[in-house]
Image (spheres, rainbow, N blue to C red):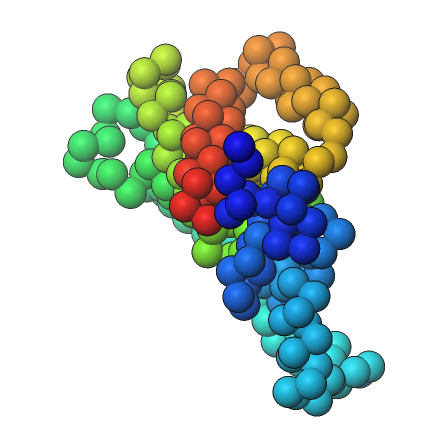
Length: 238
């Protein structure tokens, strides 16, 4: 028997795990109305329109302009750290990059290596990927959960490096990005979308890690696993 909590409150035969951010009701793709964070159900949108005046046109754009999303915040940190890497002649790289033997004494490296990159091409590719994937996942899950998935993916990616290649020095946001790939797979599946093209993209990016030297494929695999586990956990806990 289908759990009523996992079906749309307006369409009982449609399974979904997306909740209205205001009332907590389960809503399917047809009933999901985009909000500033996540989605609202039709009833809450109707109620909100009756209780408050709608801001339109330029005023709405000005109001939204001041918001700084989690995705943008991560990109800003990455940009600042990249400049510091250049200014300090890689002293920041050595301080923040992940090196497994230092995990016990410098545990911050499990997370900070995601903000360090090995060159302009590396930071541009990762920055663009983070912007595209992060925008989608943050809108679907909300800022806090998006950041939780990114952090979990980054940390699990570091542990994968520790287990599979403990002598490697790792930098880059790739583990977190692969975690967002996993999150997108799960979110898209929840919306009933096709994941075939996404699986092809993930497969190509994983393969490149084995073909191109100097890429920490261990972190990529760990990031996928961490992202999947974190997203599924958020799904179970609503």
